[in-house]
Amino acid sequence: MGVTGPPGPVMDRDEVDRALARLGAEHEAIETSLLALQDHAGRRLLEGAELTGTTKERWTSAEASITLLWAYFDAYTDALRSAREIRSRRRWSSREDLVDLTELLRGESVTVAGSATATANAPTLAGSSKLSEHFSLAALVERMNALYASSLDMVVAADAVWSALPARIDLLAAELQRTRQLAHSVGVRPGEHPSGDDLERITRTLTTLRERVVSDPLAFWVSAQGSSAPGGGRPDTTTYDREARALEEVRREIDAVLTVRQDAEARLVKLRDTLSRADRTLAEARSARGEVLAKIAASEVPAVSGPPTALQEQLATAAEYRRHAQWHRLSPLLESLEEKAEDELLRARESLTAVTAPLAVRAELRGRLDAYKAKVARHGFAEDPFLVERYDAARRMLWSAPCDLRVAEEAVLRYQRAAADALSPRVPEQGSGPSDRIDRMDRRGPNA
Image (cartoon, rainbow, N blue to C red; front, side):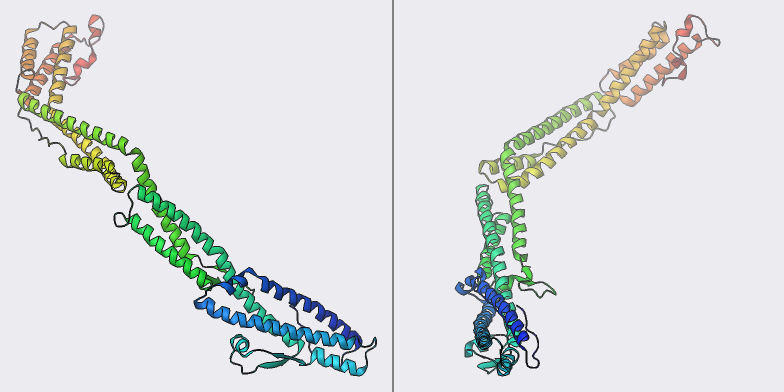
């Protein structure tokens, strides 16, 4: 909408014609804007809605403003028609006609009468006791601009909220319903699982949110800072976004439960196998401990614990949860059991290693003794009486039960030293000949 120039002295014919042309174009623009506002989808929705809160208050004011707008426009139309009629009387307007046209086009010659209700509710006339006012055409256009801007701003803002939020809330509600059905199928129910409680809360929040958005859309409108354009701003989606994120978190939780349902049997089988291996390892450790105590003397052998009965009970509980499709309870229990079962198997293996350590030491001593005997035989000392005596003594200790490892190790060391002493004189200082075949490592002592 445009604004005519300021009033001045008596206009000449050319000035009048230019003003009328400008006012005619302005009239068409104003009419187009008012008709667009009248047909605006947001305005039609506001007329038929049961409004509350801020929106109800502002729509009452906007309705009054729109009523005044049409009253102003009718007065503007009448004034323009009168001016055109005066100008059309004669081709060359008389001075009297020009004076009348100047007064009509520039003076406060337009009288607007409005209803008491509209005048009281319109924001530009609030608190005024006048039921009619006098305007110049320029002032009237300014008044219409102000009323139009405030009315359009309110209508556009409400329409923007209605266009954005209810549809999104409905889509989220549909997703919520699908999620609720899926949750129910895997045992995620209110009062039994936190996610079930979350679904109930999200449902209540979305229901309340939609009711408020429909009845009071302007409560969810954030005006743009520094913007004077009608409808400058955006819908406030804070509550919607928060609930959408909450629903996504619940959906991820349910997906995890679904995954448990799909591979629960395989995981339970693997758990049973792991715990069974741990039991067998512990049984082997207990058997080995008895053997060690019977065969090895003067040795500290750690005790072996019994099977993990608590884990077996939890495994039975997990199987019961699977049997009754209580997936939401099975999921955390399986994760805990898998970690504990691996720890139990590791503990059983460590126990077996600790228990059988003396047997491993005895086996190493036996191997070392036989290795030196073979070396001695390769160098022709297999029948040496002293070496045979030392060998027999060490062998009796290692192959007797119970075996004293400390004494047996000393006997093996004595045999090693005797073998080294027997072999070292056969290595000449300027080595040549058959004796060069003797492993020089023989001269490095019993640890060679």
